[in-house]
Amino acid sequence: MPTKTVVVGSAVGLHARPASIISDAAADLDSEVLIGLPGDEAVDAGSSLLIMTLGAGHGDTVEVSGDVEADVETIAALVAQDLDAE
Image 1 (cartoon, helix red, strand yellow):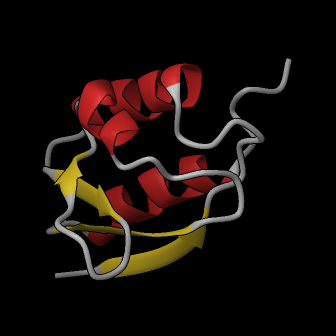
Image 2 (image 1 turned 135 degrees about the horizontal axis):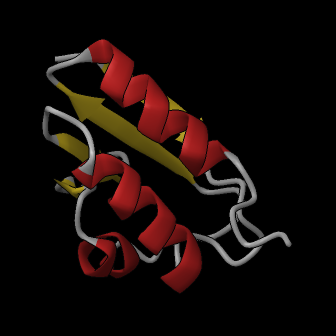
């Protein structure tokens, strides 16, 4: 299963707005993508509520995984961005 380790780029971490943007993108993919803190159980990236339960803050490292490498790269790239910036 392809996995990519990425640092959370949003200044507020993976909270409401960033989690919503990530989950919307994941829902549009043809495969399931998971996101989690290293060593913890990963959650469905298609659920903003589950993403927020991770408690990942700015600068934290998370792992994005899934069956399709391109989909993993798509979600990992979003996690690395500051999605709360205007």
